[in-house]
Every structure is written in C-alpha cells, then in structure tokens.
Amino acid sequence: MHKAEQILVQVETLLNQISSLNVERSMFYPIESDQLPRVVISFGGDTVVNNSTNTTVDSSLTLELKVFVDESGGDFETELARHRTDINVKLLTDYTLGLGFIIDIDEGNAAPPEIIEGEKPRAMQVLTYNVLYRRNRINPEL
Image (cartoon, rainbow, N blue to C red):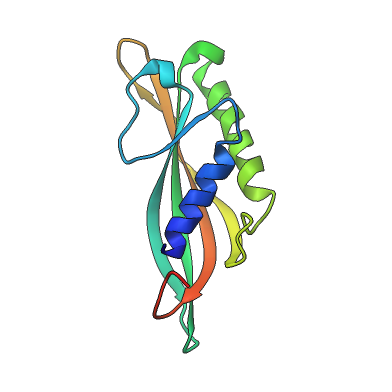
C-alpha cells in the first residue's frame, strides 16, 4: 500500500475515535441529514519537497477534510468550531500520527463555512492538513 494511502487509513482510524462524528472516505458529499455530523476524508495534492538522496523522497501530502453539520447541536459556526477542535486534537497530538515514516503534520487552511441549502439546511467547512513523510524513491510502499 502506498504510504499516502497508509496515511489516509491512519487518519480515518484516529477520527473514528471521535464519537460525535461519522467518518468516511469519499469524494461525494453526504446528503442524508441523519448521518450528520460527518467528516469526509480525501487526498489533496502530494508534492515532492526533497529528492536529494538516491534512495528516499520527502513528500508533502495534503489531506482534505470536509466537515458537514446541521443545526441540531447549535448554530453552524459553533458546531463546526467544536468539530474542528476535536479533529485538531486527534491529528496534532502525535506529529507522526503513530506512523514511523511521517516527519510532521501541520494544520493547513480552514475554508470559510458554506451553507448547503435544502430541505434541512446544512453547513460544510473544508479543513486541510499537510503531512510531511518520507518514502522510498522507487517503491512508494517502502
């Protein structure tokens, strides 16, 4: 398994420990309000930042987390901020995410919340995290 995929699997595992969130890996937005609050994990870019050795490459993987809420727990902004805090604590407590090949994880940007109109209004906010990791130059599974 490519190390970028291993990172996403680990992030999903960590976020599943937050009992107030439903977690999934998908490129599709949730549409059922009974599944909220929800965080959807997906790949952003994966940029080589250092390939100066013959055997390894350092890459920066951008993770995109889309957090969806409704107003059942309060107003949209309060709900999004609460889940953002829970996510930060889970992802930034151990800068390696428990994986030996990760060098660091940084909180990236938080986009402005977006209101999603519908039968029951929802809000979504995209959070990004940058994971610096080292992999084998030839085989990204190593």
